[in-house]
Length: 146
View (cartoon, one colour):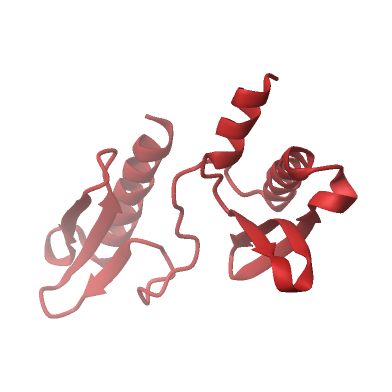
C-alpha cells in the first residue's frame, strides 16, 4: 500500500478501535474494545511492539474481527444493541400494558427511528409477542444486510 493510502486508512474511523497517544506515559497505539452480550473484551496494540502505527492498526483490526467471530458477533460497522432492558428480554420489543400491545422499535436503513405495535387483544398475548419479535428480526436484518 502506498504511503498516502496508509495515512488515509489510519485516519478512517474503525468501529470499536480508538487511538491512544499519551506522551506523558510514552504510550502510543490502538485500543480495541469488543462488547457482546454484556461482556467486554479489550486489548491494546502498541506501535512499538507491533512495528509501527500502521502495523499496530492492522493487528488491532485483525484481533477485533477474530474476537467478534469467536464470540458469534456479527461483523458490521453499524451499531448493534445486544442487551435488552425492555422487560421482555428481546431488544426492541416491549410490552405496553396500558394499551394492551407489544411495541416494536428499530433503526431504519436511513438511520431513523422505526416503530409499530402488535395488538394483544387481536392476536392473543403469545402470538402478539411472536409477531412483534418477527417484525423486529426482519427490520434489523434489513438494516444490517439490505
